[in-house]
Length: 494
Image (cartoon, rainbow, N blue to C red; front, top):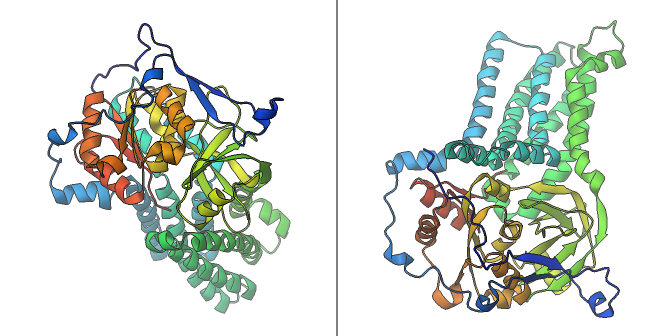
């Protein structure tokens, strides 16, 4: 993909004022402000006051435009964009490199001690790549590429959100190595080299890992998400404890008899890897706390919750819960420039969200730190079409408010004012007066690929970022990528 010159972000024209975003302080002494349930956004901009009510439009005529033909033949497109997308390529590289090494080691033969080191190394990578600070660090590095660099480089680094392929690839590879390790320990048990406790713990870990990986299959996970989370969490913690015992027993059984156990452990690589991976698992729980929040019900479909325990940058999400041991739910953070704290907009999609809308919380559990997600890649590009459907506006809003990148917002939804409230809609429209709002109640569902491609060409954008449901996201990303348009959307991977 070659780089082509693009205009720089638009500057305010003569006579216009830059949109400013304010908040009503929850600490105000004014009695009327104390009654406010939410630190609501208020926006002012003289340049767009007259146009806030007429927000529908800007998309007319898109059906008259012709979509370009898709690149390559269908077979090659499916391999490139479906079968071997970036996530699966990373998974394949990690997994098949491990399998090549495993076959080589198996042919030559190896001790259980040696095989165990590779098992722990793969588990270590699988766990660490998901640690919040590691994720934020990787996003920081990959999105630090200057906008002046060729587009193909920035498109490549923007795929950082696909690093879950390394997590899954390492986990499955660890399972394969553990099977080999189990066989070798069983052989050594008969030779009286390995102990019975080591063998038993190894069998239990293998059984638990099989369950964890089986239940992580996308098809099962989509239907039973809450069960998946609980199994992943509690079995994961159990396996971590068992791995501690396994490593200690492994070192004890295979060390030189003349070396004390504590000395052997101090010089054991698997021991220190387990120390680090345990610390990475515990790290987010060290930030566990119950915080006071301010809630505002926007409609029977959505509630807005304001937090002040920390601040967040655009493109991040945070986790909340009523029952920290059994369930956690992630939502995009909505940050306001120069204002403390952030918001969540929670839309009705299930029992938990319905409960939250019906009974807005005054306190809620949080853990970890705001973590980078797909929308963190927006600043890599000079001009971006940001697409939101329904409550997908929440991850997009911080970039609109920040106004650091030239953004063309396309928001499709049902009756946005009724669903999300005038203040939030007005804040969006003031920060992005040229946004395109498509009311699906009034106009029906659009041809999203055609509409987005039309906006992309009209805006002379470098890329498209979309926040929507899984089927539509996959359809749009494929439809645009197959036509040479850099497109980015959340993936449901691991």
